[in-house]
Length: 333
Image (cartoon, rainbow, N blue to C red):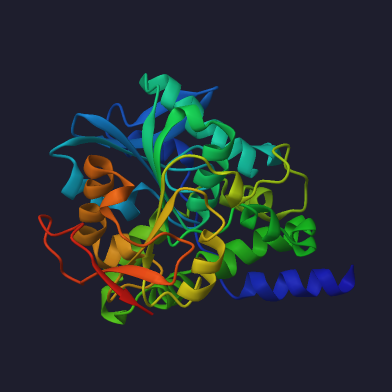
């Protein structure tokens, strides 16, 4: 106990990030941007009209991460980007069970129901890709196509849980003195980019603003404390919906070789690389990401040449225009 108290005091003296009260957050949000899903206020950005496209952000991200892709797609699609539990402007639940992979999927299904969506194209990035894959396994009848953008495997939300988080006060202190500090967020973004200059003060500030909100401590605890997931084992080989694995070629967090080996398990899948992009292609190459999505939605998987279980890859050049977005060229890596 004495060691724990010393550790907490040391962290606290290191400086705490101030948290914005959730009531103030709500008061400053645009009208209509919060949707009630089972009594939880869920922040959602919607743009355009047409076939629905549901964009699911990664760990530490939010709807804000998709702003460039949304701008490219909104002329022809109904583009929907929610904030998951624990992130962005969505209300942080008190129950730790709200932060399981299963509960996050339930949140997305509930949101679809509230918006009147029977089916949707589903796109998931990193942690959000794990949530999206698990949802597509559980409810394939609700998913038109699945895109895994530099996605973690469906087991990742469980694997990242640690006994460290069982020490709840230490977890709270870690969040406010380390994980949501400006410098730490900047470092994380730079690791995710091929070009460090993209991690501007403004960008870092926007990511921090959406994390430094009342309830973030309990959310991080719920996201990391050991507990079982009622969804049980979910594997990529269980996917039956058409799946595009879309990857930044220079991702150092989930390298291409590892991604290819994982994606090879998917039954109906194509693998596409994006040049000059790391772990967050929607930030570095939003036009290219949107172009590839358009081709998937309009032409189907057959527009891409490389099955996930082959050595071939489709490579989208950096800076490809919207018109060229899906005009990939075959190659090897």
